[in-house]
Length: 187
Image 1 (spheres, rainbow, N blue to C red):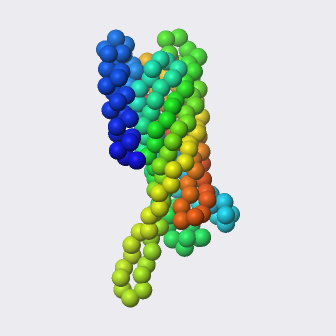
Image 2 (image 1 turned 90 degrees about the vertical axis):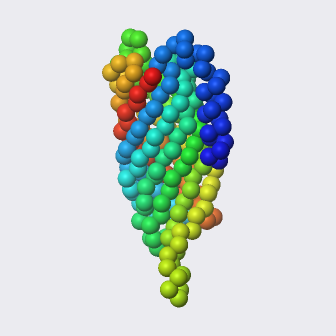
Image 3 (image 1 turned 60 degrees about the vertical axis):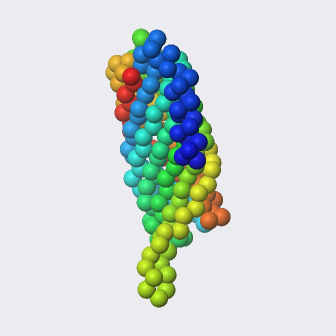
């Protein structure tokens, strides 16, 4: 999955290098921090943890772009697994943005969605002094999100976002709901 993400971003970079020279403010990097809630549907279990992520990409025009992303959904204390569960994910998707101020400044709303590859880690202790190892399960799902914020300039914005993503592991179905604040730089 990481290879696919890197290859997609490199192809995008090569295809858009001429457009970048003609128009600034098309590339972006965004960092976000907040809180993630992990729900395990099959057992009615829920927990919250700190979350953080980074994404970057290219905007084809002021309203549509492509992003690559990494999100750490946090370390969740979970009674079903009897241990802390760590969930993170790599993804690629599209971003739509609508500005309500002059020259792409002022208030905006955005929406995003795409493909996400999550990894869930659960510690497991073995009898006989073998120590603790982490059982890992990977799963592909989608993510969707929406946000609002303020473009202070064409190159800097802050905002708030909500994101919903699937998180299945070890045959158990769940999802994450994540609220974050973000800062975005465009160049």
